[in-house]
Length: 276
Image 1 (spheres, one colour):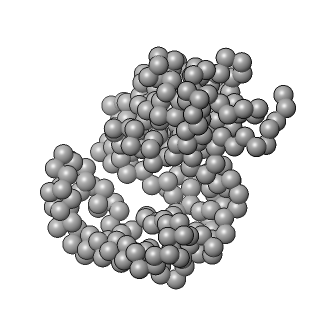
Image 2 (cartoon, one colour):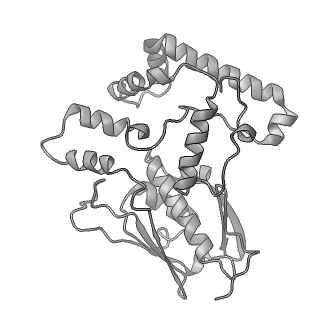
Image 3 (cartoon, helix red, strand yellow):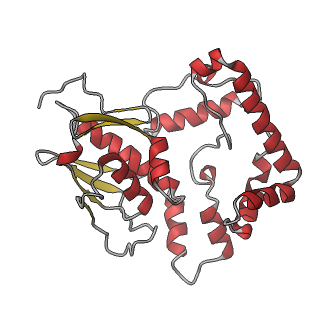
């Protein structure tokens, strides 16, 4: 099979795909909006899987929604909503889930992170790297389905800090902007950083009042869950300048695990020496 280097179906956080003769350019923000829940892990994995499929099926021409049929080994709704956002396969009844024995439609070690995406002529088989999800996470999810579950297990699942399970620590929040925005409207950028810093400082100094404000704005949230998350995150809420060493370690881990396509120049990518 010849390769046409001009066909770029996936780049950064976007995917290109044909639909009724038009080329759509879809980004990850749209995938988040498509999913009505909060299963962001599933949306991220599903989007990344479709990026790999997009490039694999666009060797000679950009892949086309009309021709696609997808089999998923992962039953999660976040994954399904994201794949449908990109391909439209689920909406057209061209999406099938094959659940592994013992999975039971639950998040556990039996769940498969595998997809088959076919355009009728070729099929892309996509797998998550075997070591990408820490073994400790699977052990935790397996315990949640037994009578050995503890309150600490439930809390750990809801507030899963990756640096406890093999990944390096990273900043709790990073604000992003294009270089054009930074250069053309620096006052906007600085104001956004200042307002966010003020909010985080308030939450750090007055957590109970911050929780009251959150629930007043979004009353559907569970107070107990939000209080537990706030308690766990409180040590990380105080704004502080970026630590270049932490950022370099984080970027190296992302590159090693395929989250970055090329090495990241930390000094170029971040405004160092200031909070936010």
